[in-house]
Amino acid sequence: MKSRFLILGSIVTLIAISAIQAYLIYNTYELKKKTFAMDARNSIAKVYTTQEVDSLSWIYRNDFLNQLELYENSKISKSEVLKNLETTTREINKSFLKLYEEGIKKTDINFDVKIKVSVTDIIILDSLTTVDEKILDSQKDSAIFILGNNFSSKDAMLINKSTWQKELEDSKQFKDLHFKTQIYMNLVDWENVIIKELSVLLILSVLLFAFVIGLLSYSIHNLIKQKRLAEIKTDFINNITHELKTPLSTLAITTKTLTNKYAEGQTEIAKETIQVIDRQNKRLQNLIDQVVNNSVGYDEIDLSLKKFKTIPFLNDIINDYKITLNENVEIVRNFIETDEKIIADKFYLGTAILNLLSNAVKYEGTKIEISYSYNEKVKQHIILVSDNGIGISKRHQKLIFEKFFRVSEKDRHNYKGLGLGLYYSKQIIKAHKGILEVESKENEGSVFKIIIPKQ
Image 1 (cartoon, rainbow, N blue to C red):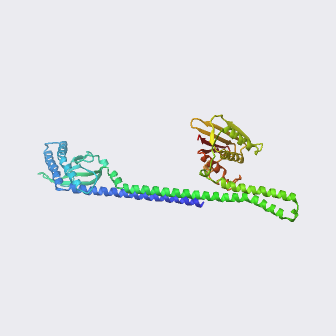
Image 2: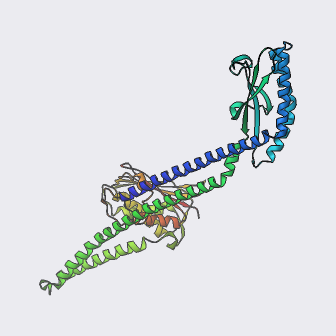
Image 3: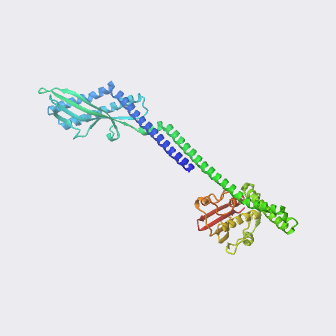
């Protein structure tokens, strides 16, 4: 439970750190965005308020006043006034764009900024400041583009609204002109520019995040691995201690029997006791040999390779093993004849197969099938050992070939052993440059597959 809480706490902490990091990056992005907009606005203001640009603005203004006078005298229509305004501004717009681009280049901004100036309302007020006439009405008419780049206002940012006011000379009454304009700016590819400027920060953040995830994953993996190894070692020590207690206890009793005064002169008792001691001594020796010999890795196994027919070799192993079995265990042979001989170490390969057979019987297999075939296409000898035993769960299938690992059930081991048989078998097959695999389902049995390539 402590390990689970530690892992859960680490994951929650990592998520929190990631959220904070993402929030800080987003805030930096938004701040950079506002800075871009402010710099662009200041740069436009510097250029737009220069004397040269102001002179161009007065060209279309003066011309508009002349057109307005003609309109007041009924010499031209309202639509002609607006059309002439568009014509005049179109003529001076090339000069305006040239001045604007030259001015922008002199500023500190390193991105493309476009400008758009539009007329939204042209209103004439009387002496009481009430609307006398609307030449252009934003509520009814579309805005008129006059200077800059004619881009869509939806993709732009409104940076200024201004009204040019002018007193109109009229012999009859006082009038006032309100000429309202809006200035929009468009930052071309500003998002890409910001991302480019923040690229170092983004790359470092991603690398740091990946490093933290990797470190956390490695730590959790090591924690689980160390915990599992500690459990396996503890279980092995308990198991080997239990296995050693029986012969040691028997030796202690037999030793007492030999030293007992009632055994003096009793040659029959002494002979039987010595036989018991000899058997228990061999049992102890076998346990020690099992731990020492079965713990070696595949690179420590010294093979004595020979070429021989596989089917007679398997028959000999099965016939010898059947002698030790109860009558309720059935062994089925399914061999496909081939002229191809296997090159292997008979002793070690036989040991691996015997370990698989022993496991099949130990884990309640009553019908064991041994199959053999040679795959000519991929040049492989294939030996299958199948049983109808209790099977192996998916979570244990990756662990059964590890040293000292034994499948446990609620902290109990229902079957004896040191957890070395399958490990040793795997090392033997690896020494032959082969593969040992398992397919299994709980309560349906297991299939162990040995693949030995043609040497």
